[in-house]
Image 1 (tube, helix red, strand yellow):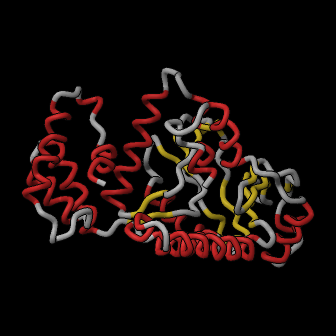
Image 2: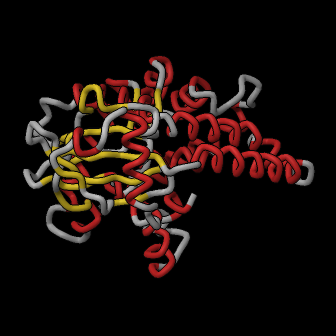
Image 3: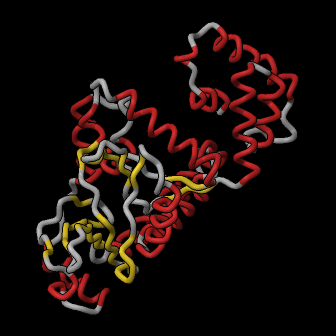
Length: 308
């Protein structure tokens, strides 16, 4: 929650954002001895037999895991990701508490019932459980690595074969600087366009996407590419939804009110029982507002929010 709130400059002042941003990759690490024990238990060999060099001091730590630098006996620089000890127990406990709170508040808040808050909590819990199995992340990482292998602007690390388990994962290391270090520079627009291009490809071609692109997970490599890592959270979009989303974007661009309504219906944002005659004036007003704006001020996300 803190990681996501750290991106909401529209809600919090800079001082609060600066504190919340520490949750992206600067959480208090756990002891190196625990990391070493977890690695040796998961991979079945002493660390000295797995790596010619292992950095006991983690270079980043987050709520679920922390990462150490290392070098294999083949001379390859790698990242060793280790789950926090006891994190699965903590997640299950916290989510049960959250589910109980939401269930209680639902009795007093029609809005929570309308938005199916309990179902959302269950979905979040299920996704967190997937994130706690690094084999899932390893499979996702391999898919993204293969997909973007030939892109000149995007780089994704690869999983080191035979060194990926439920609690420990070893991947090739990319070196660079965090993307937010490039704020308000001449490269900002170029980097933003690269990220947009990558996500359009994920949404409409691949049908699955990196679901946690906060600044701690996006950086600029020493070769000038946009580097993506931490694929613990992956979203997917089936083909009908992709087609409906593309249809909505085209309808929005063409300022076609009925087409927008049709697209919302296909996306499940409207029920079949919705009164189109009553909705049409509101959509027409939205379209009229956008027709007076420069194209650079158009926002598909804002249009979704207005509908909601």
